[in-house]
Every structure is written in C-alpha cells, then in structure tokens.
Amino acid sequence: MNDLVLHLDNIQKNFGGLKALSDVNLQVEEGTTHAIIGPNGAGKSTLLNVCIGRLKPDAGHVTFDGQELTGRKPHEIAQMGVARVFQTPEIFPEMSLLENVMLPAFSKRDGAFNMNAHKLLSRQSEIRAEAEHILEDVGLQEQITQEAGSLSRGDKRRLELGMCLILRPRLLLLDEPTAGMSRHDTNRTIDLLKKIKSRGMTKVIIEHDMHVVFSLADKVSVLARGQIIAGGTPEEVREDPKVKEAYLGGAH
Amino acid sequence: MSNMNVGKMNDLTRFLIFAVAILTMPIWMDPFGGNYPDLLQKFAIYGIFAIGFNILFGLTGYLSFGHAAFLGVGSYAAIWSFKLFTMNVIPALFFSVLFAGVLAFIIGQLSLRRTGIYFSILTLAFAQMFYSLAYSVLTPITNGETGLQLAHSDPRMIDSLFFEAGAGLPSTTLFGLKMSGYSGFYFCAVLLIVGFFVSMRIFRSPFGLMLKGIKSNQNRMMYTGLNTKPYMLTAFVISGMYAGLAGSLLAITDPIAGAERMQWTASGEVVLMTILGGVGTLAGPVIGAGLIKYFENIFSAFNDTVLAEIFSFLPEAMVDYAVTIAGLFVGSGWHLTLGLLFVVVVIFLPGGIVEGAGKLVKLVSKREKSTGGSVTQQDQPGE
Image (cartoon, rainbow over all chains, first blue to last red; front, side, top):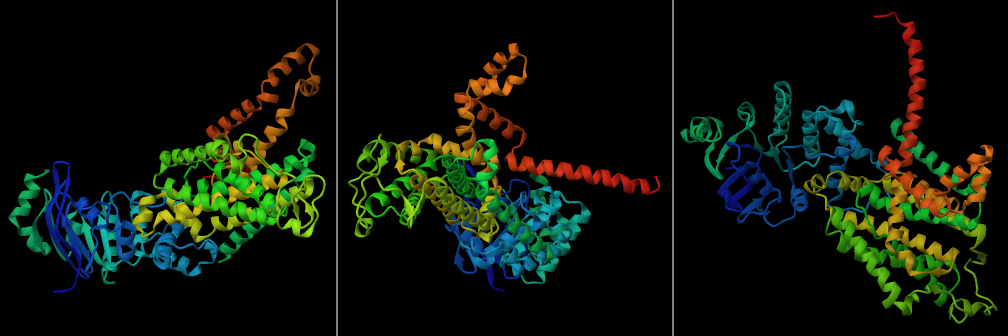
C-alpha cells in the first residue's frame, strides 16, 4: 500500500439534531484520485469543509501527511499543501486573471504573511511568468488582463483551478468541478485533471457526473446520510447493491 | 515586457503631474480665491490624511470611523515635543507618527476582530472614547476644553541649551526656517508628495495586491494560505501613521491642539473626502480633501453682497430673489451645497470625481474613435 496523504478517522459532525457526518473513515493514498459520490445532502461538502478547517468536527481526527489538521486555521492548512476548488468559484472578481493567479503565487513563495510593500508587482517577472504558464495550462491565456468577474461560470472554475494549481498543493480537493459545464467544457476539464494526475498530485473529487468519476477516479467512496456505505475501485462500486439502493431510494 | 514599461512610465508621469500640480498650487489657486497660506496648508495636510485613510478604506474596504483619534494624537504629540524639547519640527513629526502608530496598533488589534459595520462601530467607539478622555480625564496632558498651547514657561530643554528665550512665544521652525506662511505650505506640500509616492508604491506592490484580495474575497485569501489579520493590521497602522503625520502638520502650522480635532465629525470628514474624490484611486482622496476644504473656507465666506455682485447681470427685480435662493447654499449654508454634491457623486458617480473624469475622457475618446471609424467604414463596401 502507498503512503496515506489524507486520513479521516471517525469524523463526526452534527448540525443541531442533524447528523451530517457520522463515523466517517476515509483513507486517500498518495498520487491517487479519490472520488466521493453520493446523493444530494449526503454530507459531501461538509466532509471537504472539515478537511480545510472551515468546520471543526465534533469528534474524530483529520491527518494530512501524518500531521494533525483538526483545530488548525484554514490558512495554516493551506500552507501545509491542501488546496480546494469550491462549488461556487471563489475568485477575486475585481482583479484581472493575471492578478488572480499571481496572488496565490506570492502565498506559495512568501508564506502566510510577508511585508513586501517596497517591491513592485511589475518587477516580479518570475511570478508573472509562472502565472502566465498556469493560465495557459487551464486555457485562459488569451484574456489575462480581463476582469475575472466577467468570465463565464465555466471559465471561473478553470481560473479557480489555476489559482489552486499554482500553489502546487500535495492534496487538491475539488467540489463538483464540472457542475453546470457543457459536455465539451467537461471533457476539457477532465483532460486537464488527467494532466495534473501525471504530475503526481493527490486529488479528492466530489462529483455527480458518473462520466467524470469513471474517467478520473482510481478509488470511489460512496457517502449516504453522513456515512460511507461503500468503497473500492469504480467497477466494484458500480456493482454494489447498496450503492444502487442509496441512489434509487434516496433523493431520486 | 513593453507593457510593463508603459505601466511604469504612466506611474512616473502620474507622479510628476501630481508633484507639479501641488507645488504650483499658489499660482493656479489664485483665480479661485484660494491662494493664501492657511488654506493651502490645509489642502496639503488633509490631502495627507485622506491618502492614508484611502490605503485602509480604498484597498481593504474596511471603513474606519475613528481616524480622527490618530489625527488628534499626532497634534498633541507635536505640541508636547515643542513644549518639552525643541521648536524644531523634525522631532515633532517623529513623535506624532510614532504615537499615532502605536495607538493604531492597539485600536487595530481590537477592532479588527470584527468586520463590516461592527468594525466601523468599534473604531468609532474607540475614537469617541479618546475624544472624551482628551476633553476631561486627561486634562493634565491635553489641557481639556481650552486646548493645548505653547507657553512662555515651557522648558524646551534642547532649545534652551542653544538660545536665550525671546520675549514672545517662539515659532515652529525647520532648522531656522519658520513654518508659517508659504514656507509652511511648501513643507506640507513636500510631505504630501512623499506621502503620495509611498501610497503609490503600496498600491503597486505585492502587499497592495494582498490588501485588494482582502477587499475582494477573504475566503479565497484564507484557503490560499494567507493570514489576513497581519495584513489588515499593517494597513491600519500605516493609515494611522498618515493621520498622525497630518495631525503633526496641523500643530506645526498652528501650534494649538484641541480635543474637537478627535471628534467623530472629523472622522466622518475624511470618509467624505475619500468617497467624494474616489475610493481606491490614487489622487482621488487629495482632490476630495481639497474640495471639502475649499468649500469650508471659500464658499462659506460668500455673503449677500458677493452674491448680488455675481447676479448683477439680472434685471434688478430678480436680483433679490436670486440672492435669497443662492444665499441658502453659501455662507453658513455651505454644508447644504456639500451635501448635495455628495449625494450627486454617490448616486451618479459611485467611483467619485476621479472615476467621473475617467468616464468623461473615455466618452470623448470613444466619440473621436467612432467618427474615425465611420470614415473607414465608408471606405469598405457595404454588406
């Protein structure tokens, strides 16, 4: 077995009386793409929120690379090498695409806080080149001076992915990266994510689209009503009767 | 690369235009009746105050309603430096900026625990607290209601080593150069230009980009691994130090400091200046500051005689009516004009005067382009 990058150990999270996550165990191996699927309201986004420190679990531990993540601040977790693409893209709408990608590059180079007020942005040619390179990777090289807020939804997602990639994270969490995209855009994103895979980045991906899951995932875990009900390779999961029941007897 | 050079050139040009405009103020303010040192000094001083305020409000979007506290502390520190050490303005500037910076660090540390309206309310509460302290409890330091002034009996420890005390009250100097009148204005003007340069560098730096990021999306900042708190606190302290510098210059050009300088209306004034000129623009706050000080000093001095002169071209029967109506907006009614101007700017030019001017320039150049475009269209065959 490979090294574990992410390990969720008996995670519990309640919202009032609602058990959003109960006794969730998840092990993500180095270099793999791990998909989490499940009907609406199963707790998938809550799971990611626990990983990045947005929510504190009521019980259990999250370890990343052998280090405890629970109780750490979001920016510390991000500095350790965990990045996330959100379901609604979290970008800087008033800034240009180039600035959107340069900003995380500074975070990668200079850390959580750096008082570099004496430097000029226009002299940071290394960071700029890196940012241009990433924008090319995500297919947005044509419009680097455009304001990010004016992008289409699909392009905003790609931009956000670029903002995460420039951080060169060890673990990338993706929350429905292709939701609302056309088939064409979805395939482009799949190709892009496959390209990242060859770079050895570990990914956890939440997805509804089975086409995406089966093209990308090495492992699949199925979450229903806050519990992991099945796990394994995509083929194993597809044949699992419990999974079929969860999908058919659940939200549908 | 060529793009970057153009950007740099633009900034250099911008800076030079700003510097020349400020230094030639005595010339071009003359036709507007604004060419007297007291007013020119105020333009420069409140310009500094507003530039500093804009580093916080313009870049990070955090609206402080308590910046007058730093202005006041700057003034008190300067007067105490005159009283205790020397009439030279350099130590006064140093102490003002230092004390304002320390106070900003403390208030910032506490207020930045909250965002949005709660942050504004906290800064307002702190500033009002310092106003009350200065007005009553701290009377031994601030001389309460009367205001802190120079006295003949002040020790002036450093000065007394070198000169005999004269008969009257000494005046503030920069190594012998008196800091009143036009020399006072030029001293303030040079500091304004330096302040503008520093603010421009902050706007163009990676640090400035982080502050813009905080305004734009704090969530993304956090999940990108950036700790927003120290960035905010640094911006808060820098803008507090600008306010301290402005307060110091107020005391340097007129060595008296009263508690009313710290009142909430003074904090509100700098908010108005920044919004009127253009939040987040480089020169906007200075323009806003100039405009408000101009209204306060010149417009408020218009009286019925002046108005009658202006309307003398009208038939005699109408002059009285015109004077009565216009009279509401000038003299002690200048606040009314300012209020109307503010409403117009906020509703129609949310980016302030600078954005308005930018829109105008774009409109004109577009019109020119479109007339140019129609010529080329004629050259091409119709579709």
